[in-house]
Amino acid sequence: MGLRMRSGAGRPARPPRPLPGFGLSLGLGMAWLGAVVLLPLLALTVSAAGLDAEAWTRALQDARVQAALRVSFGAAAIAAVCASLAGTLVAWVLVRYRFPGRRLLDALVDLPFALPTAVAGIALTAVYSGNGWVGRWLEPLGVKIAYTQVGIVIALIFIGLPFAVRTLQPVLESLGREAEEAAASLGASRLTALRRVVFPELLPALLTGFSLAFARGLGEYGSVIFIAGNLPHRTEIAPLLVVIRLEEYDYGGAIAIAALLLAASFVCLLAINAIPLLFSHGRRGTDDA
Amino acid sequence: MHDHSPLREPPWVRRALISVAALLMLALVVLPLAMVLSAAFGEGFRAWMDALTMPDALSALRLTLFTVAIVLPVNAVFGVLAAWAIARFDFFGKRVLIALIDLPFAVSPVVAGLCLVLLFGSQGWFAEILRDYDIRILFARPGIVLATLFITFPFVVRELIPLMQQQGVEEELAARSLGAGAWTMFTRITLPNIRWGLLYGVLLCGARAMGEFGAVSVVSGHIRGQTNTLPLHIEILYNEFDSTGAFAAASLLSCMALITLLVKFWLESRHADGIAASHRRH
Figure 1 (cartoon, helix red, strand yellow):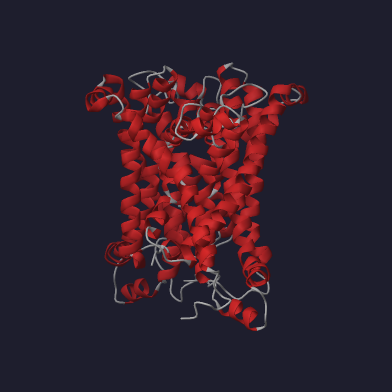
Figure 2 (cartoon, chains in turn orange, purple):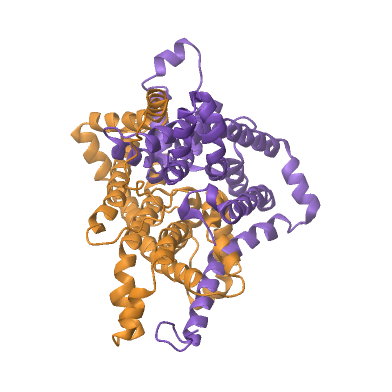
Protein backbone atom coordinates (compact mmCIF):
# COMPACT_ATOMS: atom_id res chain seq x y z
CA MET A 1 0.00 0.00 0.00
CA GLY A 2 2.95 2.22 -0.59
CA LEU A 3 3.76 2.53 3.05
CA ARG A 4 7.32 1.68 2.32
CA MET A 5 8.73 3.64 -0.53
CA ARG A 6 12.34 2.69 -0.41
CA SER A 7 13.51 1.05 -3.58
CA GLY A 8 14.30 -2.63 -3.67
CA ALA A 9 17.28 -4.62 -2.53
CA GLY A 10 20.74 -3.63 -3.60
CA ARG A 11 21.26 -7.02 -5.24
CA PRO A 12 22.02 -6.65 -8.94
CA ALA A 13 18.96 -7.58 -10.97
CA ARG A 14 20.91 -8.43 -14.12
CA PRO A 15 20.43 -12.10 -14.85
CA PRO A 16 23.19 -14.22 -16.35
CA ARG A 17 21.05 -14.84 -19.44
CA PRO A 18 18.64 -12.33 -20.82
CA LEU A 19 14.99 -12.65 -19.88
CA PRO A 20 12.46 -11.65 -22.51
CA GLY A 21 10.32 -8.57 -22.80
CA PHE A 22 12.59 -5.80 -21.52
CA GLY A 23 11.91 -3.35 -24.33
CA LEU A 24 8.21 -4.11 -24.48
CA SER A 25 7.53 -3.91 -20.73
CA LEU A 26 9.70 -0.85 -20.13
CA GLY A 27 8.32 0.93 -23.19
CA LEU A 28 4.68 0.29 -22.37
CA GLY A 29 5.20 0.95 -18.67
CA MET A 30 6.94 4.26 -19.33
CA ALA A 31 4.36 5.30 -21.91
CA TRP A 32 1.61 4.57 -19.42
CA LEU A 33 3.35 6.44 -16.60
CA GLY A 34 3.93 9.33 -18.98
CA ALA A 35 0.35 9.51 -20.21
CA VAL A 36 -1.44 9.02 -16.90
CA VAL A 37 0.85 10.73 -14.39
CA LEU A 38 3.67 12.76 -15.95
CA LEU A 39 1.78 14.54 -18.72
CA PRO A 40 -0.85 16.00 -16.35
CA LEU A 41 1.88 17.11 -13.92
CA LEU A 42 3.81 18.61 -16.83
CA ALA A 43 0.72 20.59 -17.79
CA LEU A 44 0.65 22.14 -14.32
CA THR A 45 4.40 22.81 -14.30
CA VAL A 46 4.32 24.50 -17.71
CA SER A 47 1.25 26.53 -16.78
CA ALA A 48 2.89 27.64 -13.55
CA ALA A 49 6.07 28.61 -15.40
CA GLY A 50 3.91 30.60 -17.82
CA LEU A 51 2.39 32.75 -15.10
CA ASP A 52 3.90 36.23 -15.10
CA ALA A 53 5.27 37.94 -12.00
CA GLU A 54 2.10 39.93 -11.59
CA ALA A 55 -0.10 36.85 -11.48
CA TRP A 56 2.18 35.25 -8.88
CA THR A 57 2.21 38.30 -6.61
CA ARG A 58 -1.55 38.73 -6.99
CA ALA A 59 -2.09 35.11 -6.02
CA LEU A 60 0.43 34.91 -3.21
CA GLN A 61 -0.01 38.32 -1.62
CA ASP A 62 -3.67 37.57 -1.12
CA ALA A 63 -4.14 37.31 2.65
CA ARG A 64 -6.66 34.51 2.17
CA VAL A 65 -4.14 32.43 0.22
CA GLN A 66 -1.42 33.05 2.79
CA ALA A 67 -3.76 32.03 5.59
CA ALA A 68 -4.80 28.85 3.74
CA LEU A 69 -1.17 27.88 3.15
CA ARG A 70 -0.34 28.54 6.82
CA VAL A 71 -3.28 26.41 7.95
CA SER A 72 -2.39 23.60 5.55
CA PHE A 73 1.33 23.44 6.30
CA GLY A 74 0.80 23.99 10.04
CA ALA A 75 -1.95 21.40 10.44
CA ALA A 76 -0.09 18.85 8.30
CA ALA A 77 3.09 19.31 10.36
CA ILE A 78 1.34 19.09 13.74
CA ALA A 79 -0.72 16.11 12.60
CA ALA A 80 2.37 14.33 11.23
CA VAL A 81 4.15 14.78 14.57
CA CYS A 82 1.10 13.47 16.46
CA ALA A 83 0.69 10.58 14.03
CA SER A 84 4.38 9.68 14.44
CA LEU A 85 4.09 9.67 18.25
CA ALA A 86 0.82 7.74 18.24
CA GLY A 87 2.15 5.46 15.51
CA THR A 88 5.25 4.63 17.56
CA LEU A 89 3.07 3.71 20.52
CA VAL A 90 0.71 1.55 18.45
CA ALA A 91 3.54 -0.15 16.52
CA TRP A 92 5.45 -0.83 19.77
CA VAL A 93 2.40 -2.34 21.45
CA LEU A 94 1.59 -4.47 18.39
CA VAL A 95 5.13 -5.82 17.97
CA ARG A 96 6.35 -6.20 21.55
CA TYR A 97 3.27 -7.22 23.55
CA ARG A 98 0.83 -10.08 23.35
CA PHE A 99 -2.71 -9.34 24.49
CA PRO A 100 -6.26 -10.32 23.57
CA GLY A 101 -7.50 -8.33 20.56
CA ARG A 102 -4.01 -7.63 19.25
CA ARG A 103 -4.79 -8.90 15.76
CA LEU A 104 -8.00 -6.87 15.66
CA LEU A 105 -6.04 -3.76 16.65
CA ASP A 106 -3.51 -4.60 13.96
CA ALA A 107 -6.23 -4.91 11.32
CA LEU A 108 -7.91 -1.68 12.43
CA VAL A 109 -4.73 0.30 11.74
CA ASP A 110 -5.43 0.02 8.00
CA LEU A 111 -9.02 1.21 8.21
CA PRO A 112 -8.20 4.90 7.64
CA PHE A 113 -6.49 3.84 4.46
CA ALA A 114 -9.35 1.66 3.20
CA LEU A 115 -12.16 3.98 4.26
CA PRO A 116 -13.08 6.54 1.57
CA THR A 117 -12.00 10.00 2.71
CA ALA A 118 -15.48 11.49 2.35
CA VAL A 119 -16.87 8.79 4.64
CA ALA A 120 -14.12 9.46 7.17
CA GLY A 121 -14.87 13.17 6.91
CA ILE A 122 -18.57 13.01 7.71
CA ALA A 123 -18.05 10.31 10.36
CA LEU A 124 -15.33 12.23 12.22
CA THR A 125 -17.45 15.38 12.03
CA ALA A 126 -20.43 13.55 13.50
CA VAL A 127 -18.34 12.08 16.33
CA TYR A 128 -16.51 15.29 17.26
CA SER A 129 -19.19 17.95 16.71
CA GLY A 130 -21.02 19.52 19.65
CA ASN A 131 -23.74 16.86 19.84
CA GLY A 132 -21.51 13.95 18.78
CA TRP A 133 -20.43 10.98 20.89
CA VAL A 134 -17.11 12.56 21.87
CA GLY A 135 -17.86 16.22 21.21
CA ARG A 136 -20.71 16.39 23.72
CA TRP A 137 -18.31 15.51 26.52
CA LEU A 138 -15.58 17.87 25.38
CA GLU A 139 -17.70 20.91 24.56
CA PRO A 140 -18.76 21.60 28.19
CA LEU A 141 -15.04 21.55 29.05
CA GLY A 142 -14.52 24.32 26.52
CA VAL A 143 -12.83 22.07 23.95
CA LYS A 144 -14.24 22.53 20.46
CA ILE A 145 -12.95 20.16 17.80
CA ALA A 146 -15.28 20.14 14.81
CA TYR A 147 -15.22 23.32 12.68
CA THR A 148 -11.92 24.46 14.23
CA GLN A 149 -8.27 24.01 13.33
CA VAL A 150 -8.13 21.21 15.91
CA GLY A 151 -10.67 19.35 13.77
CA ILE A 152 -8.39 19.63 10.74
CA VAL A 153 -5.51 18.19 12.77
CA ILE A 154 -7.69 15.30 14.03
CA ALA A 155 -8.71 14.40 10.46
CA LEU A 156 -5.08 14.51 9.33
CA ILE A 157 -3.91 12.34 12.25
CA PHE A 158 -6.58 9.83 11.18
CA ILE A 159 -5.18 9.90 7.63
CA GLY A 160 -1.51 9.78 8.68
CA LEU A 161 -1.63 7.12 11.40
CA PRO A 162 -1.44 4.03 9.15
CA PHE A 163 1.60 5.47 7.37
CA ALA A 164 3.45 5.95 10.67
CA VAL A 165 2.50 2.52 12.08
CA ARG A 166 3.20 0.55 8.92
CA THR A 167 6.64 2.12 8.36
CA LEU A 168 7.72 1.51 11.96
CA GLN A 169 6.28 -1.98 12.39
CA PRO A 170 8.63 -3.94 10.08
CA VAL A 171 11.66 -2.12 11.53
CA LEU A 172 10.62 -2.95 15.09
CA GLU A 173 9.99 -6.56 14.07
CA SER A 174 13.41 -6.97 12.48
CA LEU A 175 15.11 -5.23 15.39
CA GLY A 176 16.85 -7.98 17.35
CA ARG A 177 16.83 -7.92 21.12
CA GLU A 178 20.60 -8.50 21.25
CA ALA A 179 21.56 -4.84 21.40
CA GLU A 180 18.99 -4.19 24.11
CA GLU A 181 20.27 -7.23 26.03
CA ALA A 182 23.83 -5.98 25.71
CA ALA A 183 22.83 -2.54 26.95
CA ALA A 184 20.96 -4.08 29.88
CA SER A 185 23.86 -6.38 30.77
CA LEU A 186 26.16 -3.37 30.78
CA GLY A 187 23.93 -1.85 33.41
CA ALA A 188 21.85 0.54 31.33
CA SER A 189 18.38 1.23 32.66
CA ARG A 190 15.39 0.35 30.50
CA LEU A 191 14.83 3.97 29.51
CA THR A 192 18.48 4.47 28.63
CA ALA A 193 18.45 1.32 26.51
CA LEU A 194 15.35 2.53 24.68
CA ARG A 195 16.79 5.98 24.14
CA ARG A 196 20.32 4.98 23.17
CA VAL A 197 19.73 1.64 21.42
CA VAL A 198 16.17 1.37 20.10
CA PHE A 199 15.45 4.99 19.19
CA PRO A 200 18.45 5.44 16.82
CA GLU A 201 17.39 2.30 14.95
CA LEU A 202 13.84 3.61 14.62
CA LEU A 203 14.83 7.12 13.58
CA PRO A 204 14.94 6.57 9.78
CA ALA A 205 11.54 4.87 9.84
CA LEU A 206 10.18 7.63 12.07
CA LEU A 207 11.36 10.29 9.64
CA THR A 208 9.99 8.35 6.66
CA GLY A 209 6.63 7.87 8.38
CA PHE A 210 6.56 11.56 9.27
CA SER A 211 7.28 12.59 5.66
CA LEU A 212 4.60 10.24 4.31
CA ALA A 213 2.02 11.49 6.80
CA PHE A 214 2.99 15.10 6.13
CA ALA A 215 2.78 14.69 2.34
CA ARG A 216 -0.60 13.00 2.57
CA GLY A 217 -1.86 15.54 5.11
CA LEU A 218 -0.79 18.53 3.08
CA GLY A 219 -2.80 17.40 0.07
CA GLU A 220 -5.69 15.80 1.91
CA TYR A 221 -9.08 17.11 0.88
CA GLY A 222 -12.00 14.73 1.40
CA SER A 223 -11.71 14.03 5.11
CA VAL A 224 -10.84 17.63 6.01
CA ILE A 225 -13.46 19.75 4.25
CA PHE A 226 -16.33 18.31 6.29
CA ILE A 227 -14.80 18.75 9.73
CA ALA A 228 -12.98 22.03 9.01
CA GLY A 229 -15.93 24.39 8.66
CA ASN A 230 -14.01 26.06 5.80
CA LEU A 231 -14.01 29.58 7.18
CA PRO A 232 -11.72 31.76 5.01
CA HIS A 233 -8.59 32.91 6.87
CA ARG A 234 -9.22 30.45 9.72
CA THR A 235 -10.13 26.90 8.76
CA GLU A 236 -9.76 26.95 4.99
CA ILE A 237 -7.08 24.59 3.64
CA ALA A 238 -5.01 25.24 0.52
CA PRO A 239 -6.44 22.35 -1.58
CA LEU A 240 -9.95 23.71 -0.95
CA LEU A 241 -8.82 27.15 -2.10
CA VAL A 242 -7.55 25.56 -5.33
CA VAL A 243 -11.05 24.19 -5.91
CA ILE A 244 -12.66 27.55 -5.06
CA ARG A 245 -10.35 29.48 -7.41
CA LEU A 246 -11.13 26.97 -10.15
CA GLU A 247 -14.85 27.43 -9.62
CA GLU A 248 -14.30 31.20 -9.90
CA TYR A 249 -12.51 30.58 -13.23
CA ASP A 250 -9.42 32.19 -11.65
CA TYR A 251 -7.04 29.72 -13.32
CA GLY A 252 -3.95 31.78 -12.44
CA GLY A 253 -4.83 31.73 -8.76
CA ALA A 254 -5.56 27.98 -8.77
CA ILE A 255 -2.36 27.19 -10.68
CA ALA A 256 -0.18 29.25 -8.31
CA ILE A 257 -1.46 27.52 -5.16
CA ALA A 258 -1.39 24.08 -6.80
CA ALA A 259 2.18 24.64 -8.01
CA LEU A 260 3.28 25.39 -4.45
CA LEU A 261 1.58 22.23 -3.19
CA LEU A 262 3.18 20.22 -5.99
CA ALA A 263 6.62 21.62 -5.13
CA ALA A 264 6.07 20.63 -1.50
CA SER A 265 5.11 17.12 -2.66
CA PHE A 266 8.36 16.87 -4.61
CA VAL A 267 10.35 17.90 -1.54
CA CYS A 268 8.57 15.27 0.57
CA LEU A 269 9.20 12.59 -2.05
CA LEU A 270 12.84 13.59 -2.22
CA ALA A 271 13.11 13.36 1.57
CA ILE A 272 11.40 9.95 1.61
CA ASN A 273 13.88 8.66 -0.97
CA ALA A 274 16.91 10.30 0.65
CA ILE A 275 16.27 9.15 4.25
CA PRO A 276 17.34 5.49 3.74
CA LEU A 277 20.49 6.67 1.91
CA LEU A 278 21.38 9.14 4.68
CA PHE A 279 21.18 6.44 7.31
CA SER A 280 22.58 3.57 5.26
CA HIS A 281 26.22 3.97 6.29
CA GLY A 282 27.38 1.98 9.28
CA ARG A 283 24.19 -0.05 9.54
CA ARG A 284 23.98 -3.74 8.90
CA GLY A 285 21.63 -4.72 6.10
CA THR A 286 18.05 -4.89 7.29
CA ASP A 287 16.95 -6.37 4.03
CA ASP A 288 14.42 -9.04 4.87
CA ALA A 289 14.22 -10.45 1.37
CA MET B 1 11.27 -16.63 30.63
CA HIS B 2 12.87 -13.58 32.21
CA ASP B 3 9.81 -11.73 33.31
CA HIS B 4 11.78 -9.57 35.70
CA SER B 5 14.63 -8.88 33.33
CA PRO B 6 15.38 -5.25 32.61
CA LEU B 7 14.46 -6.05 28.99
CA ARG B 8 10.79 -5.78 29.70
CA GLU B 9 8.72 -2.93 30.91
CA PRO B 10 6.98 -3.47 34.26
CA PRO B 11 3.50 -5.01 33.86
CA TRP B 12 1.70 -1.80 34.79
CA VAL B 13 3.60 0.11 32.12
CA ARG B 14 2.75 -2.56 29.59
CA ARG B 15 -0.91 -2.47 30.53
CA ALA B 16 -0.99 1.33 30.42
CA LEU B 17 0.62 1.46 26.96
CA ILE B 18 -1.79 -1.14 25.58
CA SER B 19 -4.75 0.76 27.04
CA VAL B 20 -3.66 4.09 25.60
CA ALA B 21 -3.10 2.51 22.17
CA ALA B 22 -6.50 0.83 22.28
CA LEU B 23 -8.21 4.03 23.45
CA LEU B 24 -6.53 5.96 20.66
CA MET B 25 -7.75 3.54 18.01
CA LEU B 26 -11.20 3.58 19.60
CA ALA B 27 -11.54 7.37 19.43
CA LEU B 28 -9.93 7.75 16.03
CA VAL B 29 -11.10 4.70 14.09
CA VAL B 30 -13.75 2.58 15.83
CA LEU B 31 -16.10 5.39 16.90
CA PRO B 32 -16.29 6.99 13.42
CA LEU B 33 -17.04 3.58 11.90
CA ALA B 34 -19.72 2.87 14.50
CA MET B 35 -21.08 6.37 13.89
CA VAL B 36 -21.56 5.62 10.19
CA LEU B 37 -23.62 2.52 10.94
CA SER B 38 -25.57 4.16 13.74
CA ALA B 39 -26.49 7.18 11.61
CA ALA B 40 -27.24 5.05 8.55
CA PHE B 41 -29.73 2.85 10.41
CA GLY B 42 -30.87 5.56 12.84
CA GLU B 43 -34.23 5.89 11.12
CA GLY B 44 -34.64 2.20 10.58
CA PHE B 45 -33.87 -0.31 7.89
CA ARG B 46 -36.57 1.00 5.56
CA ALA B 47 -35.12 4.52 5.50
CA TRP B 48 -31.69 3.04 4.80
CA MET B 49 -33.06 0.93 1.97
CA ASP B 50 -35.00 3.88 0.51
CA ALA B 51 -31.91 6.07 0.62
CA LEU B 52 -29.88 3.50 -1.27
CA THR B 53 -32.49 2.72 -3.89
CA MET B 54 -33.28 6.26 -4.93
CA PRO B 55 -32.26 6.87 -8.56
CA ASP B 56 -29.37 9.25 -7.77
CA ALA B 57 -27.84 6.78 -5.34
CA LEU B 58 -28.16 3.91 -7.79
CA SER B 59 -26.61 5.87 -10.64
CA ALA B 60 -23.78 6.97 -8.33
CA LEU B 61 -23.18 3.35 -7.35
CA ARG B 62 -23.21 2.32 -11.01
CA LEU B 63 -20.68 5.00 -11.92
CA THR B 64 -18.40 4.02 -9.04
CA LEU B 65 -18.52 0.35 -10.07
CA PHE B 66 -17.97 1.32 -13.72
CA THR B 67 -14.88 3.32 -12.78
CA VAL B 68 -13.48 0.54 -10.61
CA ALA B 69 -14.17 -2.02 -13.36
CA ILE B 70 -11.99 -0.05 -15.80
CA VAL B 71 -9.27 1.07 -13.40
CA LEU B 72 -8.51 -2.32 -11.85
CA PRO B 73 -7.71 -4.37 -14.98
CA VAL B 74 -5.81 -1.48 -16.58
CA ASN B 75 -3.69 -1.00 -13.46
CA ALA B 76 -3.13 -4.76 -13.18
CA VAL B 77 -1.84 -5.08 -16.77
CA PHE B 78 0.42 -2.03 -16.72
CA GLY B 79 1.47 -2.75 -13.15
CA VAL B 80 2.76 -6.20 -14.14
CA LEU B 81 4.50 -4.77 -17.22
CA ALA B 82 6.26 -1.99 -15.30
CA ALA B 83 7.19 -4.28 -12.40
CA TRP B 84 8.68 -6.80 -14.84
CA ALA B 85 10.91 -4.15 -16.40
CA ILE B 86 11.99 -2.71 -13.06
CA ALA B 87 12.43 -5.90 -11.03
CA ARG B 88 14.08 -7.99 -13.71
CA PHE B 89 16.40 -5.57 -15.52
CA ASP B 90 18.94 -2.90 -14.72
CA PHE B 91 18.82 0.27 -16.73
CA PHE B 92 19.82 3.89 -16.56
CA GLY B 93 17.48 6.00 -14.47
CA LYS B 94 15.80 3.11 -12.66
CA ARG B 95 15.88 4.81 -9.26
CA VAL B 96 14.34 7.96 -10.70
CA LEU B 97 11.65 5.91 -12.40
CA ILE B 98 10.76 4.19 -9.11
CA ALA B 99 10.55 7.58 -7.39
CA LEU B 100 8.31 8.91 -10.18
CA ILE B 101 5.94 5.97 -9.75
CA ASP B 102 5.42 7.13 -6.15
CA LEU B 103 4.43 10.65 -7.22
CA PRO B 104 0.65 10.09 -7.04
CA PHE B 105 1.04 9.09 -3.37
CA ALA B 106 2.51 12.48 -2.56
CA VAL B 107 0.49 14.74 -4.87
CA SER B 108 -2.75 16.23 -3.58
CA PRO B 109 -5.81 14.72 -5.31
CA VAL B 110 -7.07 18.24 -5.93
CA VAL B 111 -3.82 19.12 -7.70
CA ALA B 112 -4.22 15.98 -9.83
CA GLY B 113 -7.72 17.10 -10.75
CA LEU B 114 -6.49 20.58 -11.67
CA CYS B 115 -3.81 19.03 -13.91
CA LEU B 116 -6.51 17.22 -15.87
CA VAL B 117 -8.47 20.48 -16.20
CA LEU B 118 -5.34 22.11 -17.63
CA LEU B 119 -5.10 19.31 -20.22
CA PHE B 120 -8.72 18.75 -21.15
CA GLY B 121 -10.55 21.89 -20.01
CA SER B 122 -12.05 24.44 -22.38
CA GLN B 123 -8.73 26.33 -22.43
CA GLY B 124 -6.57 23.24 -21.98
CA TRP B 125 -3.79 21.80 -24.13
CA PHE B 126 -6.10 19.41 -25.96
CA ALA B 127 -9.14 21.69 -26.10
CA GLU B 128 -9.11 22.13 -29.87
CA ILE B 129 -8.68 18.47 -30.75
CA LEU B 130 -11.42 17.51 -28.32
CA ARG B 131 -13.73 20.16 -29.80
CA ASP B 132 -13.00 19.06 -33.36
CA TYR B 133 -13.83 15.45 -32.65
CA ASP B 134 -16.59 16.28 -30.17
CA ILE B 135 -15.04 14.28 -27.36
CA ARG B 136 -15.92 15.15 -23.80
CA ILE B 137 -13.48 14.23 -21.06
CA LEU B 138 -14.09 16.72 -18.29
CA PHE B 139 -17.47 16.61 -16.57
CA ALA B 140 -17.94 13.16 -18.08
CA ARG B 141 -16.94 9.58 -17.40
CA PRO B 142 -13.50 9.64 -19.10
CA GLY B 143 -12.36 12.44 -16.79
CA ILE B 144 -13.46 10.51 -13.71
CA VAL B 145 -11.65 7.39 -14.93
CA LEU B 146 -8.48 9.35 -15.74
CA ALA B 147 -8.47 11.06 -12.33
CA THR B 148 -8.88 7.69 -10.60
CA LEU B 149 -6.13 6.14 -12.74
CA PHE B 150 -3.76 8.92 -11.70
CA ILE B 151 -4.49 8.45 -7.99
CA THR B 152 -4.29 4.63 -8.05
CA PHE B 153 -1.29 4.36 -10.36
CA PRO B 154 1.35 3.16 -7.82
CA PHE B 155 -0.53 0.43 -5.95
CA VAL B 156 0.03 -2.64 -8.13
CA VAL B 157 3.58 -1.75 -9.27
CA ARG B 158 4.59 -0.90 -5.72
CA GLU B 159 3.47 -4.29 -4.44
CA LEU B 160 4.97 -6.30 -7.30
CA ILE B 161 8.48 -4.80 -7.49
CA PRO B 162 9.71 -5.97 -4.04
CA LEU B 163 7.87 -9.29 -4.43
CA MET B 164 9.51 -10.07 -7.77
CA GLN B 165 12.89 -8.99 -6.42
CA GLN B 166 12.50 -11.35 -3.46
CA GLN B 167 11.52 -14.26 -5.66
CA GLY B 168 14.55 -13.93 -7.90
CA VAL B 169 14.92 -15.04 -11.49
CA GLU B 170 15.96 -18.70 -11.11
CA GLU B 171 12.63 -20.29 -12.03
CA GLU B 172 12.13 -18.03 -15.01
CA LEU B 173 15.67 -18.67 -16.24
CA ALA B 174 15.16 -22.41 -15.82
CA ALA B 175 11.99 -22.25 -17.89
CA ARG B 176 13.82 -20.31 -20.58
CA SER B 177 16.74 -22.73 -20.66
CA LEU B 178 14.26 -25.60 -21.06
CA GLY B 179 13.03 -23.85 -24.16
CA ALA B 180 9.91 -22.10 -22.92
CA GLY B 181 8.78 -19.15 -25.01
CA ALA B 182 8.23 -15.76 -23.44
CA TRP B 183 4.48 -16.20 -23.15
CA THR B 184 4.75 -19.74 -21.75
CA MET B 185 7.28 -18.57 -19.17
CA PHE B 186 5.00 -15.70 -18.19
CA THR B 187 1.79 -17.72 -17.86
CA ARG B 188 3.38 -20.82 -16.29
CA ILE B 189 5.99 -19.30 -13.98
CA THR B 190 5.74 -15.55 -13.49
CA LEU B 191 2.00 -15.11 -13.19
CA PRO B 192 1.43 -18.03 -10.76
CA ASN B 193 4.32 -16.76 -8.62
CA ILE B 194 3.00 -13.23 -8.32
CA ARG B 195 -0.74 -13.96 -8.27
CA TRP B 196 -1.30 -13.25 -4.55
CA GLY B 197 0.81 -10.12 -4.68
CA LEU B 198 -1.10 -9.00 -7.75
CA LEU B 199 -4.39 -9.60 -5.94
CA TYR B 200 -3.04 -7.64 -2.96
CA GLY B 201 -2.13 -4.67 -5.13
CA VAL B 202 -5.42 -4.78 -7.01
CA LEU B 203 -7.30 -4.94 -3.71
CA LEU B 204 -5.65 -1.78 -2.36
CA CYS B 205 -6.13 -0.15 -5.73
CA GLY B 206 -9.83 -0.99 -5.63
CA ALA B 207 -10.26 0.44 -2.13
CA ARG B 208 -8.70 3.69 -3.23
CA ALA B 209 -10.56 3.77 -6.56
CA MET B 210 -14.05 3.40 -5.11
CA GLY B 211 -13.40 6.06 -2.48
CA GLU B 212 -11.48 8.67 -4.47
CA PHE B 213 -12.95 12.06 -3.76
CA GLY B 214 -10.70 15.10 -4.29
CA ALA B 215 -9.49 14.45 -7.83
CA VAL B 216 -12.84 13.14 -9.03
CA SER B 217 -14.61 16.08 -7.41
CA VAL B 218 -12.61 18.56 -9.51
CA VAL B 219 -13.23 16.86 -12.86
CA SER B 220 -16.75 15.50 -12.36
CA GLY B 221 -18.88 18.63 -12.66
CA HIS B 222 -21.30 17.10 -10.13
CA ILE B 223 -24.08 16.41 -12.63
CA ARG B 224 -26.69 14.48 -10.70
CA GLY B 225 -27.54 11.10 -12.07
CA GLN B 226 -24.68 11.36 -14.57
CA THR B 227 -21.25 12.21 -13.17
CA ASN B 228 -21.69 11.67 -9.45
CA THR B 229 -19.75 8.83 -7.90
CA LEU B 230 -20.78 7.46 -4.51
CA PRO B 231 -18.38 9.69 -2.51
CA LEU B 232 -19.63 12.78 -4.39
CA HIS B 233 -23.20 11.64 -3.80
CA ILE B 234 -22.42 11.52 -0.06
CA GLU B 235 -21.11 15.07 -0.14
CA ILE B 236 -24.21 16.41 -1.89
CA LEU B 237 -26.63 14.72 0.50
CA TYR B 238 -24.59 15.79 3.51
CA ASN B 239 -24.57 19.42 2.40
CA GLU B 240 -28.35 19.20 1.91
CA PHE B 241 -28.68 17.99 5.52
CA ASP B 242 -29.96 14.60 4.36
CA SER B 243 -27.99 12.85 7.08
CA THR B 244 -29.66 9.45 6.71
CA GLY B 245 -29.08 9.42 2.96
CA ALA B 246 -25.45 10.49 3.28
CA PHE B 247 -24.68 7.94 5.98
CA ALA B 248 -26.58 5.18 4.16
CA ALA B 249 -24.33 5.64 1.15
CA ALA B 250 -21.37 5.93 3.54
CA SER B 251 -22.33 2.64 5.18
CA LEU B 252 -22.19 0.92 1.79
CA LEU B 253 -18.67 2.24 1.17
CA SER B 254 -17.67 1.35 4.73
CA CYS B 255 -18.78 -2.24 4.15
CA MET B 256 -16.66 -2.40 1.01
CA ALA B 257 -13.72 -1.02 3.03
CA LEU B 258 -14.23 -3.65 5.72
CA ILE B 259 -14.38 -6.42 3.12
CA THR B 260 -11.15 -5.05 1.64
CA LEU B 261 -9.51 -5.21 5.07
CA LEU B 262 -10.73 -8.78 5.64
CA VAL B 263 -9.34 -10.01 2.32
CA LYS B 264 -6.12 -8.08 2.95
CA PHE B 265 -5.75 -9.65 6.38
CA TRP B 266 -6.46 -13.09 4.91
CA LEU B 267 -3.77 -12.58 2.25
CA GLU B 268 -1.29 -11.34 4.83
CA SER B 269 -1.71 -14.36 7.07
CA ARG B 270 -2.61 -17.18 4.65
CA HIS B 271 -0.57 -16.28 1.58
CA ALA B 272 2.29 -14.51 3.28
CA ASP B 273 4.83 -16.08 0.92
CA GLY B 274 2.96 -14.72 -2.07
CA ILE B 275 3.08 -11.04 -1.10
CA ALA B 276 5.87 -8.57 -0.44
CA ALA B 277 7.75 -9.35 2.77
CA SER B 278 6.97 -6.10 4.55
CA HIS B 279 3.23 -6.91 4.48
CA ARG B 280 3.49 -10.36 6.05
CA ARG B 281 1.84 -10.91 9.39
CA HIS B 282 2.83 -13.67 11.76
